[in-house]
Length: 91
View: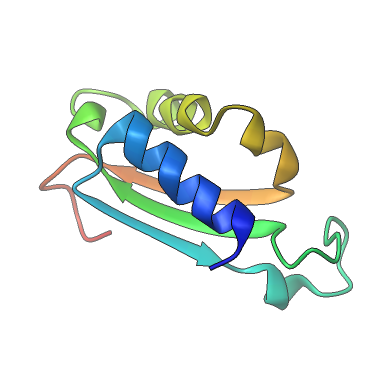
């Protein structure tokens, strides 16, 4: 696991206490595209299930994820987030 991916996991775990968390590094699919910085850690997909999302709308959930990530958000070019409360769909 690489440094940014590890930090994403650590920050989301600390900030959201997820029941389930999956982080996919999609950077290799974006070689040569805008935003690919050569680090191999520029594009990510996150799937997170947390009790904290209960009663929140989609935008509020995105804000909660961004808040948990803090300044790390500025080091990531593209971040796709699927944030669910327990019992909502499959993550």
